[in-house]
Length: 607
Ligand SMILES: Cc1cc2nc3c(=O)[nH]c(=O)nc-3n(C[C@H](O)[C@H](O)[C@H](O)COP(=O)(O)OP(=O)(O)OC[C@H]3O[C@@H](n4cnc5c(N)ncnc54)[C@H](O)[C@@H]3O)c2cc1C
Image (cartoon, rainbow, N blue to C red; front, side):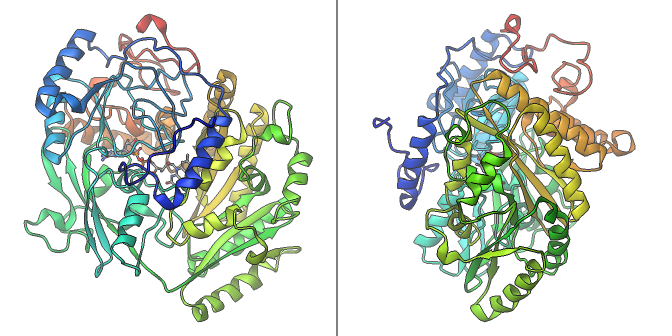
């Protein structure tokens, strides 16, 4: 273990860790590798795109290499190394739920400019080879860097397109290429001395600002709804043309990042969680430093406090007294956030017994409790004071509620990582709970519901029933937006163990269906559940999907761009049996896809 190389720093690579987090990253890496028993398997074979022979693929890639440079085209024929968060693969999903060779790239291409992205798109149309864009490829929990169709050529945009094109300190906006991480943007703002600018970041800062935003990711300051903060896109369409949205459609525009709509229909939404275009530039608004902040933590003793608490939160959140996408976590997460394997507390199989978890949680700063609210108030002290008093009197109306004094919380505690994130300083500590099981991987169950006590209870009951059925520890967190909640459940599984993967996979499928029956839909999901989730948005005989498919077929007649992403299948791929978890395979099964929904089993005959 002593021989582990240090994670690459931001000085060395665009995707690296800032120097001030290097020690933390070293220790996170150490914990991951200490918990690792999975070995790197010999490859079963090169993944081919559906209907493309090996010779055809190799000769098309040779041609591509002459157009963008040999060194920028890489065959994916080496063993698949999952790495870890800071040294993640761009060839596959490091947290694979199916067989790890199921959803993998045949090759990776690294375009260096919008023009080169156009070149790749035109090449894909000539050869009818599916391509799949990633910005940083750290979409862990939602599919990582994996393409939806096995054998697609992954366009890794971040490696060579990672410039911060503009930071406007007056308008508080920026313009970014795909490879700019939250870490990199934060560091650039500090380096330029713009103390009055904040960024908003997710739990971990290594993702691409652009990739996260177009996947509608969330962060934890008042600017936490990233898509709502974007302002202007540059997009390469699936047939190779380039457009700019909003004010960017004017030649010589001077307000591209200042006014998101421009004139006429707003087309930006078509490029978010979609396969209608490749985003090569994105504008983003930045939050002005509010002049101070204070994080706080309240605990609530009983499981049954949940509905009342949520009903108290709703008006406070809508009125912006609770100002950020705050989190209501379960006591189990306090234990998991310590970063220890659960075997430290319990060595049996199935769910960890409640008494074990409660006993461990009681030893922590949260003490004896069931729910923990992490929040932050913003502004100078005299402004915060009024809001904090209101919050205090509302929360303390719940019997046995407690405010935890931050001065009693050790500096290494998760509370302080949340404090940094909620004030726009990216961190890394959130990785810790992944160590709960050996070879820890996770996927998110993330349904949207009204901010309503009854709904919170109903969703929690669905999740509890299925987690109990499949023997998985339950990690729920309610993330409260303005008028809705995301219930985010992190399902942690052992990615080297097919029964653990199978349990997570089936549990997720069951929860998606159960939730949909009650009117709750996922805001985002892992690649392998996208067909199923898309189908739950089926009002009026699937009218929305029919509309999406018409647009897709019009924009992408050869269906080359990320076919199947978010359940949108172009004509060319529709009846090839590629959908997962829904319906029956279509008549043409000779897809070359070769995947099965059996974790650990790949259709060997297709390789
Ligand atoms: C412990 C843990 C905690 C996490 N917490 C959060 C959190 O708080 N909030 C959150 O939002 N996420 C969270 N995530 C999920 C994920 O890590 C982040 O959302 C991350 O930012 C996504 O990866 P990325 O930015 O590298 O995007 P990418 O992987 O590059 O992109 C995501 C997807 O968008 C599409 N895409 C990317 N770039 C383009 C492009 N240029 N054009 C067209 N399509 C494109 C692709 O389909 C791609 O698969 C967490 C993950 C882990 C492991």
